[in-house]
Length: 250
Image 1 (cartoon, rainbow, N blue to C red):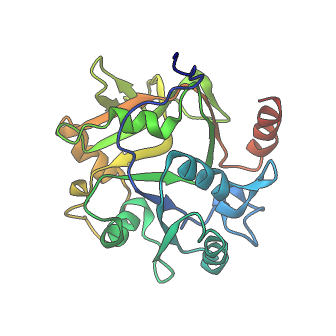
Image 2 (tube, rainbow, N blue to C red):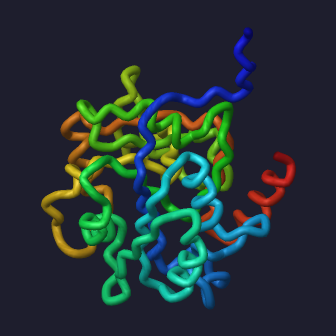
């Protein structure tokens, strides 16, 4: 008997069971929409930015979410309580001090466990290409040689993104930063897999994840994989109608 045709075969790899969702920022670029609600709860195409991310996590098989909160934290906590049927939810509370991305990861480290984990920003929306993007990342993860694996999109396909690119990639997938005043071919999507071993020796309480990235780059343990679907940088109000129009066509 012939095997049934699989129209969308998925990459093989161990998807991290835990995801860190970065939701503590003040959303200043999204004002005035964030005057009364946190940026992750801004709606795009009838759904919050946070729910767009959670749908992807659920579809990839992630069952455990750690989410950090600071600005209008009660709103995000209430929203996540309604997700209890889909996820085991843990809140990393930054109400007392906004810790930036690196400090937020350090505070959440006890909740993240000892295995590699996903880390996802909430100000981007993506559509999978031929395969599930998180599973694609998982299929490329190699703990023997990586401390960080970034999902990248070509600069030419980074919708609503106003930057000049973030990274160069060598033939083996190792990443280096864009040189000052130059253009780089790839933009980080806000999605990454990190080893908890990278989260050590913080320079203070509040600092950027760039500190960890620079260490991984220097060690040759900073890698990337290219996203084959659509990606939208939804960091400002102006990006919302552009993204909604593209999603309607898709």
